[in-house]
Image 1 (spheres, rainbow, N blue to C red):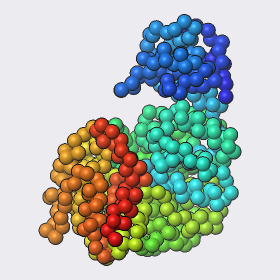
Image 2 (image 1 turned 30 degrees about the vertical axis):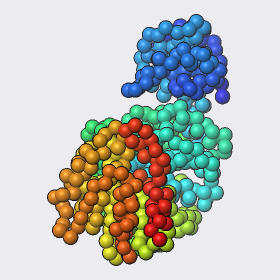
Image 3 (image 1 turned 45 degrees about the horizontal axis):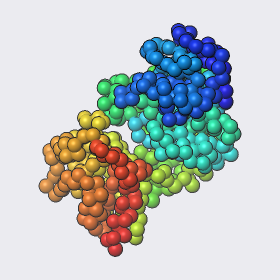
Image 4 (image 1 turned 180 degrees about the vertical axis):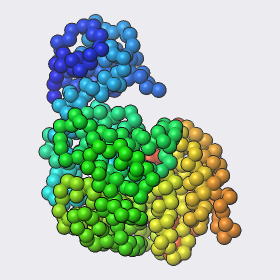
Length: 496
């Protein structure tokens, strides 16, 4: 894919240009390590790294032009384009460079604190059952049909996202289902993306280190629905699928200027789950919708998954998928990696690994486990460092109220002192701890998991929460290989 620099400059009305404007741009990059011959190098000013410091390296690697937001001394022959904000300029230039791939795809965006990943995989399963070619951009991985690409962020930055969307167009993909994070919406990482369906799962306290207030967090989520209703769209048949049982559902509806499809359990909605029966092996319920009613027998369980399924049904119905196909797909769906994932090595107690890392997420999985627990629930969890501290005592309180044995441990401590993080969690545990319950603080996550599995007896349930599908742990000075599922399997095999 190539563009003449003059085409890109036409998008930047306030740009000041020094040097030859008539150059061929073959690549756009903001990481100097990815510069090749014919690159437009975008200098982003980050909190840790300033791209303006890498202009010489980029030139040596083949950059023919640089986009800057402050005066620089550039090598002779390098075209310098100065703009007020390189990040905003990138958001204008990059989608155009890739010929706006999102306009050639049906784009389904899923936003919310919890349930995004499972909902995207449920929608993918339905659309594949209906015969479409489907891609996913999400937390676990990027999928182009069944080809797996690694991910850096829940929603990649503009360059990565537009690159992969263009690749999906070339691969003949029909639908892209994207987890759309609040960060991506607030920072406009989705620039150039025209969404056709937006799904709202829920909002609970998370990422307040970034958004500062809960109201800001909700408003960031609502941006997806404002985008749906824009009048400059190139595609029709837009729909917002919204969980109105969640308090923030009204805010999403208020920001929606297209067809709205509501879903709920506790009140009348366009799609409602009724007569719900949650068991360890799965959930059964009746779906009432404006297009017809049907029964579902799922292989996944938990009230939170009932909501995820309703959101997926709403997206599929919005896209005209037949109810029979929806039912067939959902009843054959088994699991998503790291989401209420069972670890079975023949032990006489249950071990469940889940990504729950928010108060609502932890409460959901503990409540689900309580519905079929015969004996004790042993909960192992932590809270990430350099992230929202306010949720730490809240998660401690929830664990103390809903589990029988609580083991607080490290999640991804990052630059923070793990002992300090556990002290903040403990502040929520102590006031709620009943006399017949106990808790421990074990900084080392492997030791904490070992302790939980050693304590477990017949018919107990061990919940290992917080990291789910992640295969690493971020410490102060290094990132180590760490997979809760693999660690649990190794320990269980050693206990035989």
